[in-house]
Amino acid sequence: MLKVAVIGLGDISKIHIPAIQANPNAELVAVCDLDESLKDTVPGVNFYTDYNEMLENENLDCVHNCLPHYLHYPVTKVCVEKGVHVFQEKPLGLNTEEGQALVKLEQENSDVKIGVCLQNRYNESFEMLKEIVESGEYGKVTGVKGLVAWYRQKAYYDVKPWRGKMEYAGGGSMINQSLHTLDLMQLVGGKIDSIRGSVDQLLDYGIEVEDTASAHIHFENGAKGLFFATNANAVNSSVELEVIFEKGIFTIKDSILMRVNEDGKKEELVEDAKLPGSKFYYGASHTKTINQFYNCILQGTHNYVHAKDALVSIQMIDAIRLSSETKQTIKMEG
Image (cartoon, rainbow, N blue to C red; front, top):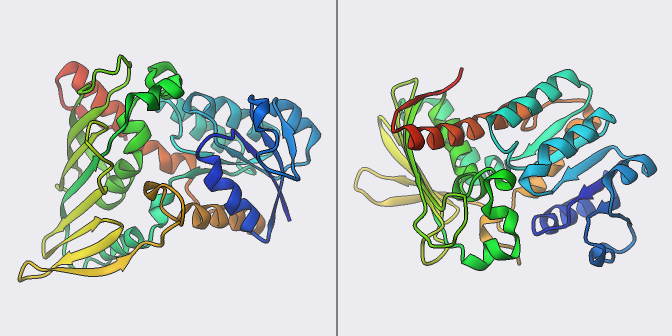
């Protein structure tokens, strides 16, 4: 039985905690948050306002790091150096430099696992799409399109000001709302050669981070990618991921994988599981991702999203931002 704790009782912890409690091989023994008013959020578990104190007092196997972005690396580092496995929310870090530090931390502590919550990799629609890519049945991938047209009102940043500050968030629509889409694009498109991108603010919110970003991506295999993300839409529209093959087109939209037939009609192949009562864009794959990470801890296996796996999406974001600043195409690091 794994002894588990959660650090950070914000919005995303409400997805993690039920998943932990539903796992027969895990016991939630402690939670931690600076806000003492959250003390009774999870009845029957120990509550702390200091994660160092929690790590000293509890005999933990795994900690879920559900803190704001700027606390991902420092808190994960403390846990790992104490020999505690970490399941960390995205993003990997604020930027490539922090992401690389986490990769180094992972390499230097090979007996401790760092799993990154890129749960959309485990959506049924994407799992099937990835299988189609790998099968080669429809030929090579020639194009990848990722669209995220969402809405965030000013109150979203006012309630939690860290979201609007580069120092604490590491960015806006890219790192917060569309990082999963960038991650999936590179998984189906392959290794990236270069990126030309642009970031902007279309909303007059007085924040530092971007609310809109776009990019043209050159993959090493010759495929082209188009990425567009914004928080300036009127509503949260469905994320769209389209993959163009030599002999077919497949699209994930409204959580359904569809194939465009020769007559132009769309054929539904598989629909993602849904999580009742939660925000639609969380999907239902947090539980699958968490369960898989726990199984890897218990069985000593390594089939989870490592820090090194999560680094590419952070590098893409930094490349898009640098390209926007310099008005140049940016070569991706190897």
